[in-house]
Length: 109
Image (cartoon, rainbow, N blue to C red; front, side, top):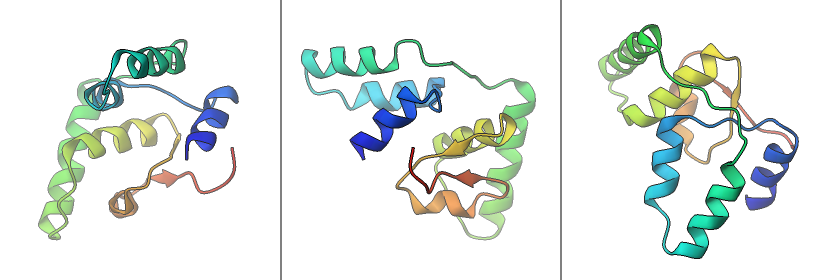
C-alpha cells in the first residue's frame, strides 16, 4: 500500500483535495508522522470542488440513497473530483465501485 502510494506520487499521478487533506491530518498520531505526511503532500497538484461539483455530489448521493446504497459524502466528494478531472481513485473502500462514472486504480503505479 505505502509503496503504491509512493510510486503514484513519484510518477505525478497523485492529487490532493481538501477532503483528503483533512482525512489524512485527522489520523496523524505524532509530530514525526505529521512531518512525514506534510513532506509527502508538498507539491502535489491541488484540486477542489466548485458549485457544479457540489451539486453533482448531492445528485449522486441522492441517486445512490434511493437505491439503498449509503456512501459517506466525503467519498462522494472524492469521486466527483476524480470523475470531473478524469482521474483514477486508489482506494481500499469497495463502495467506490457503486459510484457511477468512477474509474478505480487497479494496476501498478
